[in-house]
Amino acid sequence: MSFSPTSVLVTGGAGFIGSNYLLHVVQSYPETTFVNLDALTYAGNLANLKAIENAPNYTFVHGSVTDAQLLSRLFDTHGFDAVVHFAAESHVDRSILDPTAFVSTNVHGTLVLLQAALAAWKNADRPCRFHHISTDEVFGSLGLDGHFTAQTPYAPRSPYAASKAAADHLVRAFGTTYGLPWVMTNTSNNYGPFQFPEKLIPLVIRNAVVGDPIPVYGRGENVRDWLFVEDHVRALDLVLRRAEDHSTWLIGGDQEISNLELVEMLLDAVDQATGKPIGTRRSLIQFVTDRPGHDFRYALDSSPVQEELGWSPNHDLASGLSRTVAWYLENAAWMNAILDGGYRDYYDLQYGSRGMN
Ligand code: NAD
Ligand code: DAU
Image 1 (cartoon, rainbow, N blue to C red):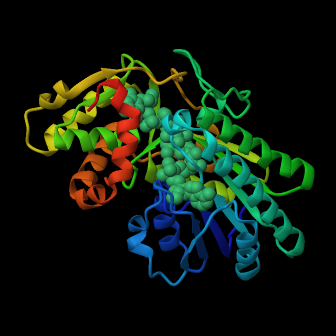
Image 2 (cartoon, protein in one colour):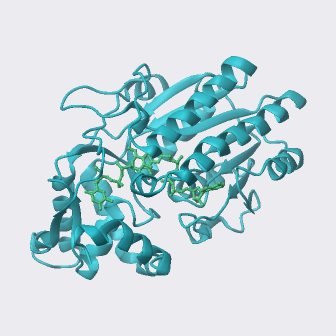
């Protein structure tokens, strides 16, 4: 299968993965136009896109995927032949504090976007391929052994995961019922430049730099599989261009580690990058109340995307973390600009009762 889109709608392109994706594709495909539709929630940041903001094949539109009229206008104007749907509420802890926005954006927003893509596809002479960006969390929680595959039954456990699972089901239902061409990717924990510091890795780097306590949930025994975001976006590009319609691809970094080991590795990397004796910052670690319903482990079988589409990650955890730490240290201004009152309010709500102030 070979597909070369000419006009692509990217949703949520001012967020972490969406901006890394746009930075890659806008420069790699100058003949393709990319429209970035983003509501600029607390997680959306146009500073991420400075390098391409004036590119002739890139346009930003401020708006929501829940706005059917706006979507209809955008499809009419730009004749999209592909949609890459990143827009979502993405943080598990926020979904535990209040799931409302998760259902609105992740479920209802995906439905409205699917309806717009379907209407456009029916009126056009070219299919509109819908690339849905999803997560390994839809499959639930693993014990010490085993991997999720594309055939693993869904068993989401947090409000975030449930909202992503609902969206995934809607995408597949639009394929089965109406014939909409879709591809789907379910990915493990991403990290790298431009990640909002509510997520573990940038939060640890930020707290390590200023000497604040590092909150580790429970005993830090939960396991995640970490994928450097630039490796992820290369895989996304391959799937959009090469995968068969109605196919699902699991993309993981094959870099499993417990949270405590990861935090220690990261603190040591910050020590090294700032010229402190390795191990100095480990004393900042503070074990705090566990996340309710905390999934123990995620792990993905990525062999199909490796064997059938020829993808492989370029970074292991050590090289990815070292690049990530270097990026955050060099981009302190980026971090400081987003540590506003809204971030403080969230931090107090999330960590205040866990003894983190
Ligand atoms: P993020 O929170 O950094 O960014 C989300 C973006 O979506 C923001 O720019 C935000 O402004 C935008 N947005 C939110 N609501 C919107 C709406 N109603 N209309 C338009 N835009 C809206 O998220 P991320 O970490 O970049 O994740 C992107 C996607 O990848 C999500 O669908 C997430 O579920 C999925 N995913 C993330 C990871 C990860 O480790 N970060 C892993 C697997 C899957
Ligand atoms: O697995 C893919 C998912 O990865 C994505 O779908 C989500 O959008 C993304 O947020 C991420 O979810 P996690 O919950 O795994 O990521 P987070 O960075 O919030 O937490 C990583 C692990 O670290 C998790 O086991 C919880 C733990 N943690 C997190 C924070 C923020 C801590 O111990 N302390 C913390 O302060």
